[in-house]
View 1 (tube, helix red, strand yellow):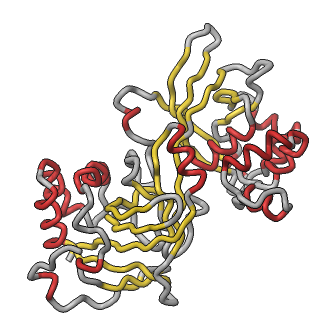
View 2: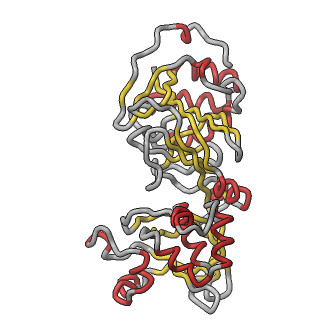
Length: 344
């Protein structure tokens, strides 16, 4: 544990109440692993938050920028001098919550449909604001009337409907789009809206059907390969669908993740999605999670949100892109404890 400073022996502030949570002040020495984290990695994410800081953290951003070239002990001392850790609890007092992970899929696509690439990815329909919620996933797939509303809104086509579902759940992805002239365009498909239907987990549906005992993405994809005639039934169990916008993916953009709900690019391993009614965007958070999949004790930044990320002690951990990230995101589901670091 970290050695307490003079400030760490002062009387602790009173608990703070948020819309969904209670924050309970603690000593820095109570944060597991605080003395061992590579803080400079988190500083990269914090610098991103300072591109669009909220009113609470904006006054600290000049110091955050100055400390970006400091060593770990100096960064740690500054944290202890300027911030107060608070344990995040549910209003009922429980401090243990759930950690999951998400990633940015890497996919092959075609600008035009052909015999292989048949699953369209859409821009938001022009009538999206006129009907809330908009049509379900099944209605989009089956109704000629609804498909007519989406005509001309196709961005590109994937070969696999499950890849499209994964892309929609993750909220963004990197795609190599084959153009009509045979060239390939690298792009990011970023979240641009949804049909506002409720999100239903296809993994939960498969568990309820008795089809799986393990609802990880590797298991789901294995079930899909063995049950091609039931794929649509599985997909339609989740009425929610997501619409995208296409963004260029330059070499500079490619070293960062997509923009999260805070409006800044995500940092692999250092950005989390939270319930903003529990933790405001831009807040530095000490995250501790132990389970069969991974062990985490690290500083992260609350920079994103998600329709399934709801509750007092709830975090979705951004793990980046590529096969290793996909594998980790598909399996990570374990307990988590969170401490917000709030200005004194």
